[in-house]
Length: 229
Image 1 (spheres, rainbow, N blue to C red):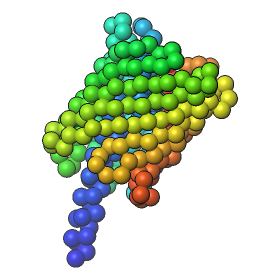
Image 2 (image 1 turned 30 degrees about the vertical axis):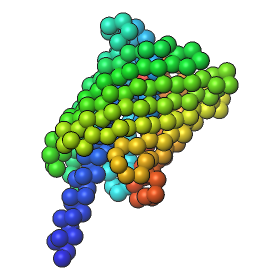
Image 3 (image 1 turned 120 degrees about the horizontal axis):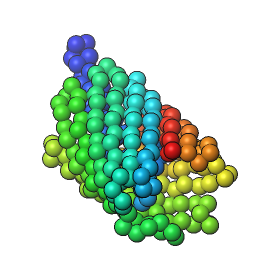
Image 4 (image 1 turned 135 degrees about the vertical axis):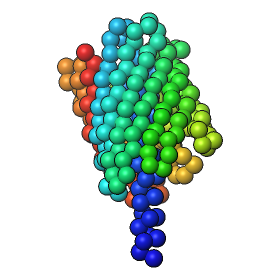
């Protein structure tokens, strides 16, 4: 009986590792901790570097590194890597292309296509994700409302219509808070709060807390850095 329970625990941790890797390396966006993408891209001939560490319950840590560049004018290309450390480790790689459809003024719209390859003890899995990020600027730019709607095609045929929404509120000139809701599977959605501070317009520091709604056992704390030289 004890052996059976231990095997079930190990299997659940392996599934958790795979889920966490897919969760935190789906695509590259302006925040290393938010799942909701924005409808903007990096400046032409410039790059953006992001890194984050997310500690989740129970006892799993995700380390992530992302880079996004606009080498071809009007098209942003991104690469991402994530590693989950737990009872059973898991890694994931991602690549994305993104282009602006409506430049951001009072509102904006973009489109992106990304692919993710997840390697875990429970098996390798590849996913494709077509996403349409949009945003609306309110109160002279002090409040931004972001929304994403997209379709995820998974190698295991567990396809999913994904959505996310976030509200970013400027507290001071360089400090703000983001509140986010999003789904990643067919269970209850997730919620997350992210506090971010910008230094010298090129470096931002972020802290986050999130959890799955209706399940306090799936929660995490995050720390992220974004550098745009």
